[in-house]
Image 1 (cartoon, rainbow, N blue to C red):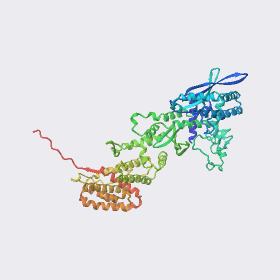
Image 2 (tube, one colour; image 1 turned 45 degrees about the vertical axis):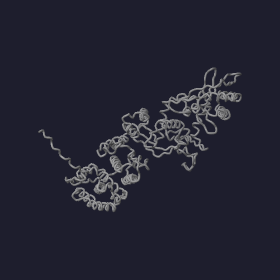
Image 3 (tube, helix red, strand yellow; image 1 turned 90 degrees about the horizontal axis):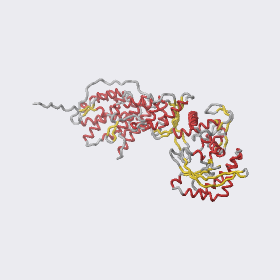
Image 4 (tube, rainbow, N blue to C red; image 1 turned 120 degrees about the horizontal axis):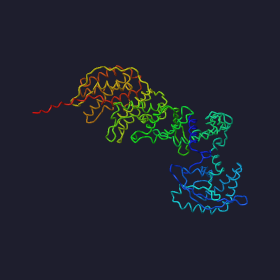
Length: 633
């Protein structure tokens, strides 16, 4: 489980942070951000001893700069909307209202806690402060307002209010007093055993994280907001919220490490993968391998900065996965994909991939892509600013066909779950038809169908190499006829059977059965017909209407083939111009036509469209005229 991994990260982070006191975990930076500093208005009170009693005097307002390195001493923690913040430190604003809440609410709570906790010195200090606030309330408000008005609007919007105490000139901040430490600690841990007006605690049972018997176990200690039992129906054990500790028992020690680990994960291990958010949570293979955990955390936290300038043209998502794949298998990664509510910050887990080893990342993002990227079929596949570009691997190619089920795709690919080939054909054709239909009605850019087909070819090839999609082991044997159709004087090109045979031989993962070769060849035939019509009819292609928007079934495909043959006969002597293509269609389409009813319409349509879009690869170029050598005479 990722809980143990997160707790291990928290344990390590606590050791490295040097935070000796548990309360420091729950102190919040009022305005967080690297390098950000802000103003803190300090109401300063001096204390003296008179007749063995502390006496408090208001001495004025000071302004200090708080930052990432100094915020701890002010002991700020956000409270509820009505009762004010947890300690005397709060965000500036309506200063009269803020001071009134401090004197009338927070101070009384602190005094009551002092009495319960037997903090005698702190109790005397707060009683003296309460007396002084009663006497000098208006003067303190006016002094605060005067100092606040000296700031410009931008500084006012990022400023805070706190108290500073002085004893014989020695400055003491809220963090120096046990009462304020206790306030923050109690507020930070209040939800671990008490929530929804219910207390859930167990005693002398096993903790679900450290697996040790502990005297006290909390029922609401998970810091992740996906672990909710706000409705009784979400709780097992006869829907009793008090018994939630039995479902999710966490001891006090682990709860602190768990919470600190959650903060570390949220702040430093959050990444994005093609529009989705995820946490990359490392876990060492050996539980005691502290050095391995440090190395893995360093790798992940620095990944964004290790990407070289030369690789910035590639998707960062894929580059991060490639860098992980370079490591040895001394750790595994838990990838937690989630969606976060922007208001409540509650997260909904969409996918959890557990214990993925670096070698799996290497296979998915380096080894197989390197093989496919070298395929000449993907060379100069499209243009950007009129510059030819090769089609290369990115996980975005797969996502393009899985927009409605991207998490399912990620799960299948990462864990190695087989993918149904028919499901792929359905997705390929859904996008191909969508792009085709858009192209008929839109004046804007629409991805060419030929590029979509090539991407589908790439995706299918990728999944076959990963053994996620099965292929027919039958080897298609094409006739070794070396004759080729002659180029036409008018059109300058004709069908090259040798190139076609070579394509089939090199794409066994794609054309892995005779009937697929036959359907593919019919697509080539129809494209040749459309090319002829475009030339003969000034750009018109009336035969295209018979393709029904690429919604084909066995009957329509047979009809398309017969009508294409008849139409070609009207333009030229087909038997003389395309003999080798006709022979291929006869052997691989006509002889296998009885198998067509057993395949899906989307599979049939896909191979037909693929043949249409790849026809240019089988052209026989007209021979270039021979030039006579220039005579020296």
